[in-house]
Image 1 (spheres, rainbow, N blue to C red):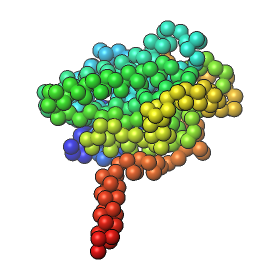
Image 2 (cartoon, rainbow, N blue to C red):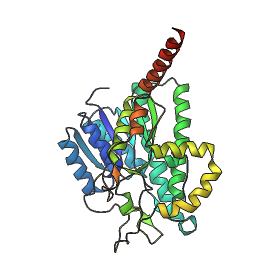
Image 3 (tube, one colour):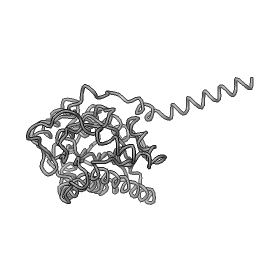
Image 4 (spheres, rainbow, N blue to C red):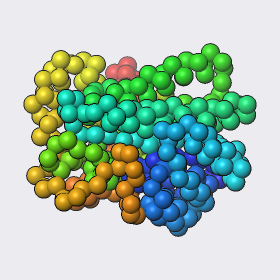
Length: 328
């Protein structure tokens, strides 16, 4: 793909989606920004332009398939054929299951899971006939290891992984060259912890360690151009994914005693705290949340994951050198 490809990013008005848009903009891409909040969308559009890209801001609720399809049509009409589609939109509620309403559970599922499905379908309608394109699903360690108090979100992320694995097999069957990948994230410093709905009287936080959203963005952009089935970003994601395979029962008990306190800070809740579950929160939000002083700007694990072929080659070379040393 060229540096001026057309990229669609859902959930790109803030958080990881916005950081990803800026990362693509540095490559000179033409980027369609899809999200509900008009103020933040406009701010993201200006930031993309300042970073060297072109931007098209399209107010879109990804839970509505007609809006997603209409956005895709507008992108191709104004920017040309879509090369990369990144599904990043999400919603969550911090709450025990017993306190969730059916409407809340449905909304989280429609935005996080069905929004990804609708975005993927819109991309495929255009990419199949051209025989090219890349679709990136932004997942989470919670796609493998669910945690208490985010049952709706975890269920949606598990659903995305199941949907993506099924679709991948279909693309292989059809010998389609479309690149489909999933990026599993750790905890990131984004505004979701300032606007997610709560049924607990404490201020939420990412479970430490926390990374800056630019770390996720670098992983997402890299995954769009490299044919990797999955990319894990951050050592905590690696531990959670592998732990869910090896010691699931232990993790159930560990999270029961640690994940409640880990998801909340001692900061008091702000008065009249907004939430974005059914309506976007007004204002110009950014990629970063309120945890800049605690968030890490780099991940050594991501660097190793991206360069794993060189790492393996180096290990093989050292082993070969050792064998030759013994032989001679």
